[in-house]
Image (cartoon, rainbow, N blue to C red; front, side):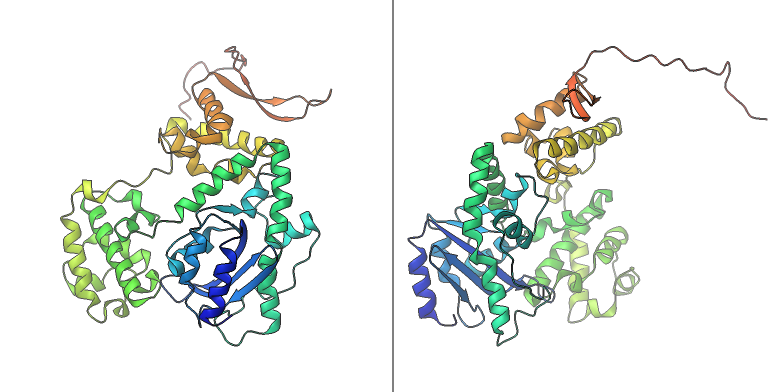
Length: 399
């Protein structure tokens, strides 16, 4: 579909649909933001492929904001693309990959899921297809349509199993987190927090990193190129550490090349460094802690092992239960930690709290008599196991 009238007909048709399937094809290798190359839609008795290079897809916003539920597979990046193309994300969302994770699948591809749940094979396609090239072949269009054609029947099958296991509300909570997280466009002023070494920065270096990273994001957006082409992370960190005051000092920073300073970029970069030196700590902010105090680090390993066991026992993808970052946030007392809210609070948060406070313990379950082996979280007896080991009579001094 490559005309406004055709898209208007589809929008009118979807406005009455309780559910509709969506998929996007996009490229982001050479641009600051992902560039939409193809938009696929399916509903109860039809489907459409929209060419966003020929027609503005913004009118689809009325459907996304409407009462119908958008069904996607692995929705995260698609939501980012829809937000930029249409100015909004769906008001109601169902993610088939997330739903499958709560039914024992481990981050499945759509092809795997359709094959195992519906017995439907997807057509072969080249995952490195250049979707921006025109015209698209019949094979490419068949491949694109297949990505949405079976999403609604797949949703029916997944929801039936979720209802049988009582996990539908869990999926709804998780999908809502994804939907709302994708609603916010990146903030240049917090871009420095995504640097891997952000936590190691101290004092004025932190302000310089914040100012330089924000400058990099805004320049990349204005030029529509990836931020790393404006300045690599290594250079941002090097500039934050050395805080150069001249072009010569700037060129001496590892990762900074002449191409990064062309077109007035060098002067803008020095201005950003100067501004960053003056930023107060309250404005810069504090990087989120991804680790815990030394005394609690053994608890992270214990809890991670227990959650892996729990995921297997409950047939839930362990990655959906909690990441290491989730554990760190919870153990650090973050009120917004995922383990402190929703279904995770009851299933995971409270048991983890009991374990860390010494009110529960982990043990290996016995095998046999119908009891499965593996880790078991149980009430603590407070009866230590005494191990009789020989102790040296005096510290060994060598020799």
